[in-house]
Length: 408
View 1 (tube, rainbow, N blue to C red):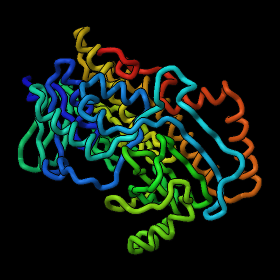
View 2: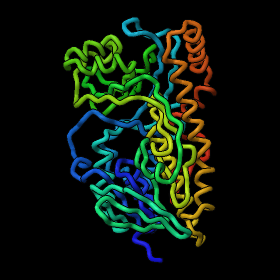
View 3: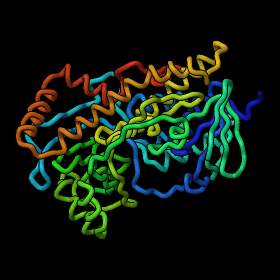
View 4: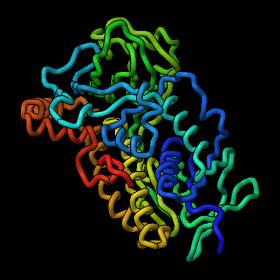
């Protein structure tokens, strides 16, 4: 039976196009189905959203030929400072400090604005001869057989491929149609997201300040700007977000402090509810999941996109290696290798972020003492500190070739 494409990817955010570029580099024909029209994806206005890319994610973008297009817009993260305390009272004397100079590979990661990364991905897939893009299309049904999968679109079109990859977020229709169940819960927290301009330079230092309602991340962008991810209880976040800009900043200032001088908003303000979502399986018949479709994490460690890129690098390697061996890469045997590779890592990361959030987002005095002492011990021991730095850079674990700086 003929195929319209080798692999169809459902989801046109960041993970879907990145996966398409990796697979197309291996000579595969790929179609990306995006429910959104193209124009909103390519908007160039700064809206405040940004991502912390670990060192291995930078290597991944280099491997798929994208880093050169965004490097000039990326801000290296040279240090990370982690503190604990209450708003307006200043941080605890116990803290963690990680410096990129303690590892040989370079900066632990880079901050990149959503607009630059998204636009570069869109332009790259539009220009690639092995990638077709279907914007404004929605999948309404999928059926599988021994050789492939057929997708029915809302427009009445049908698309047949050897494999379908779901990159369509936590409410993944691809996963639901494949019968993949998931475990999910809310943290009762909401993230307030914005970008700030400040008077003093940040010197490439990322800050994480843990407070009882939730953490405040201050992440360096290019120039005298920082990206803010600020967690509050859901009720308080709704109240704060309803305030005008000046009043919003008045609430933020006691939490932010004055170490960067005066602050002002740069770009829009966003909120999103925080919770955990973990698919019970990353594969089904002729289906694989990547990114938030497989695991939606708390942003406490900034690992959501990095974990998605690690999924993608692993799936590309598994599929392309199977193709070179003459195997059916969409069959269960090949897909099982991908699940075996990524499932434990993703479950461990979900457990770690969940535990970390529960441990730090409370005001129990005994837990506060324990965690403060723990941070002081980690910061004082070079070997343990180096392990945490390598973890932040994404260098630990069984890395795919693209994340080791090797070609597919």
